[in-house]
Image 1 (cartoon, rainbow, N blue to C red):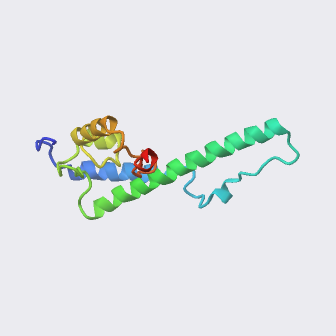
Image 2 (tube, rainbow, N blue to C red):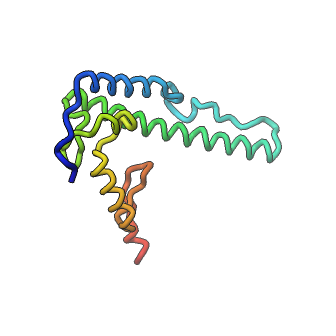
Image 3 (cartoon, helix red, strand yellow):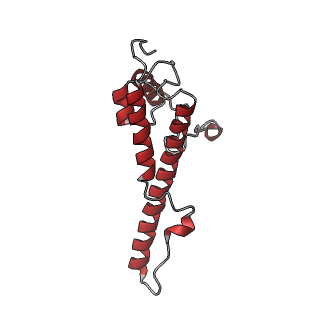
Length: 146
């Protein structure tokens, strides 16, 4: 568990962090693109196999970056909602305040550094309990062992 010596964030710190979250959301590249169809993933007309491969590769990366950004936008929205209920900056695990420096580095953090390090140790030591870092889903490996 984390120590309870962490102090609550000041109004100025909260304002700084909220502005940081809003700036990050505003600066997103794909935020105005609703669907993959709007990303102009067109294939070249009459291109050869090399051009087709390059286009496929580029389209794959563009979709990957878009999906990561959509995932991060959801985390930003979740953090902004915590401001509304005065819960921003509280660790989800131990309930202690997350240090300002950590939130400046990762404004969507939901755990204090102590709880996050403990969770990462537990995850790295557990094969069955691992989660997909990008999708947040539990990986079920019990069916594979049958």
